[in-house]
Amino acid sequence: MNTSEPPMNKSRRSFLQLLPFGVLVGVVGSISGAAFRFLRPRLSAASDQWLDVASVSEVTGSQPLAKKVLAEQVSGWAISTEEHNVFVLPAKNQVLSPVCPHEGCEVTWEQSRNRFSCPCHESFFAADGSRLSGPAQRGLDALPTRVQDGKLQVQYRVSDNV
Amino acid sequence: MFSHRSDHIRVWLYTTGGIIAVLLLVQFLTGILLAFYYVPSVDHAHTTVSYIEKVVSSGSWLRALHHYGSQWLAVFAFLHVLQLFWSKAYVDRRIGWIAAVLLLVLVMAAAGTGYSLPWDARAFFSTRVAEGLMGGLPFVGRLARLWLLGGTSISTITLSRFFALHILVTPFLILGVLVWRFSRKVCWSNVSRNAIAGGLVFVALAIWCLKYPAPLGPAVEAVTADYLPRPGAQFLWLYQSLKYIPGGLGSIVGVVFPGLGLGILLALPWLGANIRKQIGALVLAGFALWVVTATIAAHLSDRRDSNTRQQLARQLVQESAWRSEPFAPRSLQTSPPQSQSSSAGGAPVLYMKFCSDCHGAHGEGGQRGTLKFPPLLDVGAKPRRAPEDIVGLLKDPPAYGLQPPMRSFADKLTDEQMREIAAWVVKLKR
Image 1 (cartoon, helix red, strand yellow):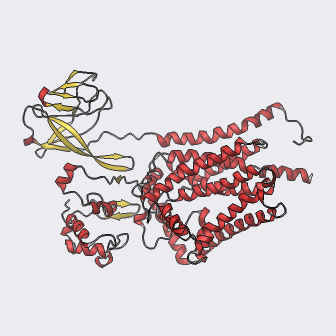
Image 2 (tube, each protein chain N blue to C red):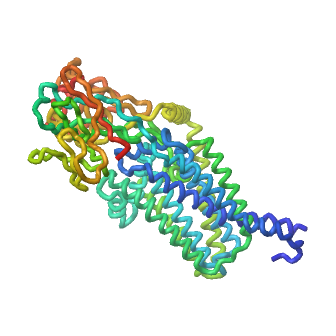
Image 3 (cartoon, rainbow over the protein chains, first blue to last red):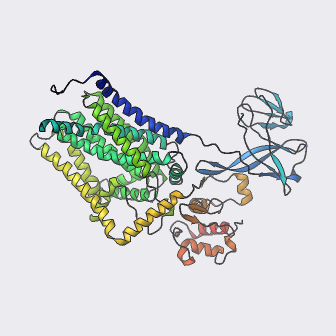
């Protein structure tokens, strides 16, 4: 300590004491601001891809038919082809999402009991997708469909409200 | 009066510690953020870094902070050692001295391992050089090379190793050194000036990074034969030195000499009191002179040769053009789902391994940077593209009018494997 230096006044001393914290806050703050934008999830619009489910001639009978659709999915830097299960209701020409509206598990069709059941928390749905019992608060979601060139097509999407 | 003024300057020279603290903080924070998107595999590393550069908000700035911050950190870590040497810390502050030298070693190790991660052409060539340097070490070369690569050749395992060393091993060792250093007696003086210097360096770095994004060369598989790899500023001295050194002696100069120098610096507190100052000065001045001279020589050498100058300028233009192109998402190289595989007659495994990166998993073609890779759909209908032609083309692309980046697979695939790929490719239809 140089004793010949004039004594610092109180406000200057407290300013100097706070300076390292100020620099710390400045560095962390500016990087954190960028980090918020950097990590912000990128929301993609619901897919408007029409995916082939089956030929119209195949869609017959009174029971729900389990089918698979292949959807191209862009996730950030990657494009992947995802396989999704859907259920076709021939009587109503409707396609149901298999995603349980309770917690998002995939339901299965129990032919012997004529109902859909969710393996996770025991929600049950009727053959037309309406809710029967369990913690789910609504029935299975119907997906947008159309018929094109003799094929039943669907737009696959998962409801945000799961 | 003179003494007071020189004291005033000296206290500002003693602020490298504060600058290093700020730069280390920047490296840790930006490194954590980059790890949210980066994937350490040779298939995806370049794509994920491109995604950070082109798509993610503030990604280019944060990556530039990490890239240039590592270079500035190496410089200030060296200046910190110089400053401690000047104040004879090796005599009365041994722990501080050893910690500073270890920090310099670890900062260089972090820079070296991080350099490979983007897996662009420069990263690939630098990994090759690191492989050569390790392989050329006397006695332990073969083992050192195998351990560095994680196998007999550079592969995705090598990149995983560099990633683990970069994000886990070196940061923990750096933290360990800092904890060890600051768990001992620390004299907290000059703190305000350290904070001011650290803050100013951060502002300078932040502005620099807004103006100059971190470089990213072409992906390894898109490299053309005329590409000239040049390392980053912190390794130019090594690159230039290796030009003058024949064969295996490069390992002596690139690894053994720096290792010996750092060993001597670490041992300085225990060397004879009458010689350690001279030895330390010789090592530090010698290293500084070597690095500065070789770095300048590298720049001059590139400028003197007109072909090199023009090619490097072309590479800069290509990188700039690549930056302005929109990002193209990459197809994940997973096996196609069973139902699709059976209906479309799934791609052969070897096509997925060697061809799909460029021509797409379904032969749809692709684009990387300025390079476009043609689709293979309906290729069988084109002249000179019968299955036997495709086998010949895979062996000798120029004979079929194809230029790089299409390369020969004669040393990768057997005739039978080529025929399998050719038979599948000619069936591809739009």
